[in-house]
Length: 415
Image (tube, rainbow, N blue to C red; front, side, top):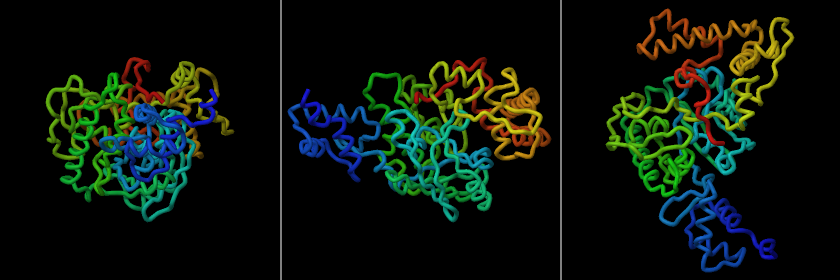
């Protein structure tokens, strides 16, 4: 008992040593440094490996060598395809890879990370932001400075946002826009192939007893192999793994090699084009991004008065508020009122029924576009008009689960 109080655990030692090392370390080096903090015996190497297996940020970078994710991120670059909603609202939705990039400690505890990060917009301001939840998805709310920056640069939904990690430990990042016209498609395609091959090898070597490798673990391993260390980053990870690799994404579990036929090839002719596959593609680029709530919280989120973190909106305009009655309250409508108050406070809000009538019309147009591959010009104009009025991204409807029978099968991160 006295020994437990006198000496730090292997877990604590490994975490402290790796997090304070700017470069990866071998197991032998870890053992030798741990020996300066506590007695070590013949089982030291095994104890170090066990500690590493419990530390999300302890990332393998080679045979018997490990680095700390926050340190490994320095200098790596990531490509984020902009969406219409992100450009309009200045809220950047994060998939698992990007969440690990901005908040590497999150996946150790799967609890909200409160750290403030610095984001320098190339040729624009430097913003201080933290993680938020936007409609059940982890996000960075960059706000109007980001909206103005994109607008001044002439950014569109066909452009990419390139994210550079200046210092993952201190939370310093840079962003710049890359117009579609300046994409080096051949080089990006090569990077996509490198990413897919690395992911296949990582998942194939996974020896843990589980249905699939969690996406955030795969993301950390790819960063450890510096797949994103090139000045030309590959396309979105989920897109690349679906289009270029033989891996299959199991919702709520991760990527697996099971049930795959063929190598997946490198036949995708363009980083943005879609080819048919036997397996079902990810529902959207954000994978499974709903916040993990307990059963009561999830029921409140889906059937009650919205997300627990959304404010109760009552502004004295005389007509409506989010708390008119229990029957006129839902998460989607409260989100609409929240967006309206922030971006168009002078506009008279729709009532609950009117909102859902227009929402249904928007969903119908999106489904028609999905079925036929295009809309007539007047339908396209109407779709965009409804999207702007309701503050709903049509891509979100197409990629989401609005066409399912119920919400019981909606995937969400186990976080």
